Length: 133
Image 1 (spheres, rainbow, N blue to C red):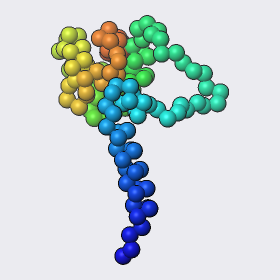
Image 2: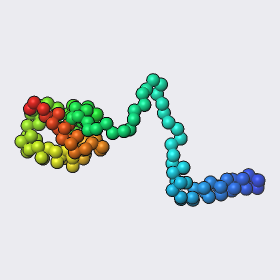
Image 3: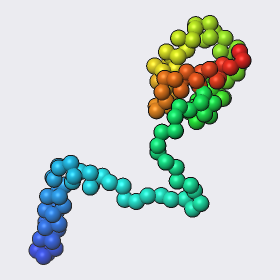
């Protein structure tokens, strides 16, 4: 097999250049390497601000984060407004309900699927789900 020296040196030089760039572990270099390549925009969509809008209502939290399980009963979750599902849980007291919702219980992960919910928002979501029972 005949070795093409020119191609070999080109490959070797390329590897050297890329390996020397990858070893720069400064914060600025790492930030530059992992930055997003672009952004996605949907025509006609209104850009929303990430600014805090205040506490969300129990209904808003339920619709955004709780409905998948508590609206359908998935994985044994008590369904919103169902007295048979919630009765034994309500008997344990509000403090236990909130503790389980915040810390997780059985198949429910901590804070359900609302990692950015405050304790007050979790409490409001529970109150919304058991309202009228």
